[in-house]
Image 1 (spheres, helix red, strand yellow):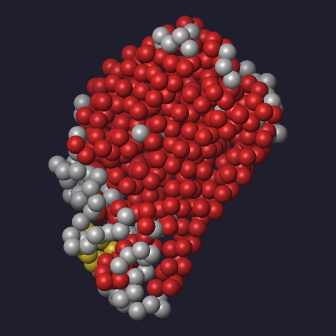
Image 2 (cartoon, one colour):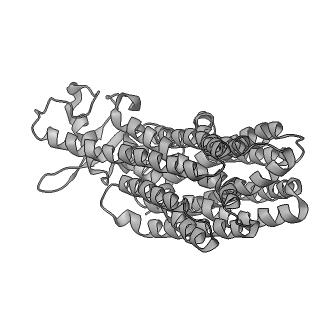
Image 3 (cartoon, rainbow, N blue to C red):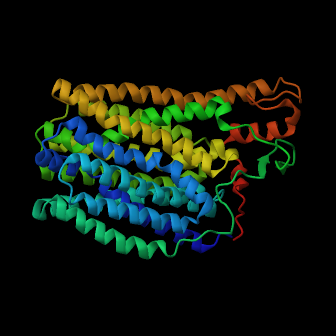
Length: 460
């Protein structure tokens, strides 16, 4: 049985997400205040928030290096201190250029440390059973933080100004997050991000037994030697442009169509409620579904493209509330399944590789989204062209996602006519055909038992 303490760790990590990611996902509120005080363009002001979002994901690289040497608890504390220090320092900056350093870079890196440590701990405690439920519970902290911090940040900014609001948020986060981080722990000593030593696969024999293939004498080719991880990388990168727009330019868009600050708060609450409800449903039912979770990601891109296209012709509050709620559901389908889907497809490469090929492209796409949409706004005077471009890019990302299961099915079909000494996976040596078949079977089925490969078992 999985220890109940694993769920405590997931809950505490989710609270960390709410505290550090909630305010930054409401950057669209602060964007208007920055423009008023510093008299900067929409593209540059939006890029400041986009850079902070991007470093949450791109910062996975230095965070992964720290996690090789330090425990997730220590890395979480490092992230808390960086985040709170950056937010507090932003309250004293004289120009937007300094905000890039204090808010975007320092706070962004701090958030990436917290995010990476939370993912590693969750996958270490739940590598196979309840993996989807645990990752959804972890990710639900972000919309909860967005839902709560939006009205709080809006109210504090209106009453005290954005500088005092930043100081209050930094102080509160430092105290509460530090207490919660003190109780984070690994399930077992060791490096949870290491490449697995064993793969468990389901065979197709009459007894339907499980066979274990030990990889101690087999060196798995790097992930960049295969096509599927690159399709995943590109699809996530392009698709993340839409989520970056929602996080950094949504308030500016609604202000452009004539909505008030109060209306913006309602819209942010609406998208957060959709996100929370969606992740609750995913947490409840995703583990019982027997098809690849990547189809949820493709569906979220398609839905986001449709709803973003409908926003083009929206100019009143009620349609905006409905569409933002639906966008929240689409965002939940992406964020609630992206980690477990990566585990399902690429778990043979280890937790560290999974987080890198998932979070880094997300950060790159987010970094591009604000300058792209803001630049098109400055060029045309509205967000119509920006939304149409996002719809086109979401179509491309959907194609990339759907190509992965298509290639897997094609590979499985080709394997039926191949000899035992032929490698079914591109780039793998035919001299280890037994391992190749086991790995290919795990990739093609997606829902098999290869989640045990993190070096932990379920019996804690």
